[in-house]
Length: 397
Image 1 (cartoon, helix red, strand yellow):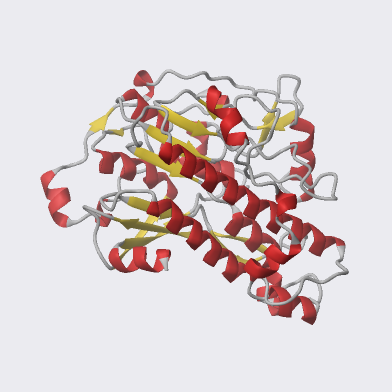
Image 2 (image 1 turned 180 degrees about the vertical axis):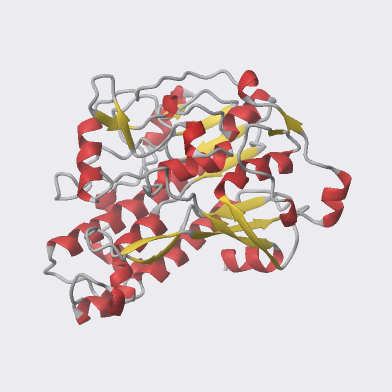
């Protein structure tokens, strides 16, 4: 009901993901989400993959200090606005902001599954990894709110994501899929708890002017469970009819669950808030026979919904790009757009009167205003090896 209401009373557009890179390589989530908050193509902002060469030439997980462009939270902080960020990809180590930042680096060493490489690559808090939260004194508090994946037992998965009792005997692929379902839902619940706590205890004493949050479960479950929803499209073999019966609605259930999470988040916000909901891509059946770990894969067309004062109501206005997200948010905040950005503000999302009264402002670049640590090589952590193992198991490297 939350997404339906936002669509009915707001405005939506088809949001295109990034095109392939110079060598035809597909752009993956850290790259796309960084483009969304910088307004820049990857070659400018510098986050090109899940991994990057370290000082010794070996691959390491990408980290926030490699980003060469200011993100929305840096820009808002530079202009004296309070910000809150939860779970956005490629944000570890957490950067200083006026407000709070809960980084996405957090899932990697928790014993999530029986698979030794079965740690997730998208978010929750993990004890023992420094710099996950800014301000740092909040990290122990937020770690205490963590929902452990082993607390999400089969009965809870059945209630949320399946139509029947989970199979007692599972092949390796199904077990990994269920582990992914388990940790991604636990991660979403962890981030929701963090959002709720920070809404009641904002570090500055004020609710943020800009809040950004990322929830991964729809992505993870769509990758793993698409073949049960569309078994006839699966190119790598037959799908057990019993599993189709059990998991055929798991992808749809994931959308219902995240709709509930979104409803709880918005319930914490004033009615006058402006809301943007977006995806970095859509989904479709996996047509790549070499990528066996995901039966669902990325579709270039995603979504963007905007709702609240100043946005159009009940309209579908056309198409945009993920690089337009940052300029659009800046315009909504009354802040200038950097002339060095590749995106532009999506003015067709706004009511005519809004655009007539206020044309977009422009400055040459946000970079002179933003002070932040930068480096060519990623920062090392105690869990780099585990992250690389996990990325290999799902075919990202």
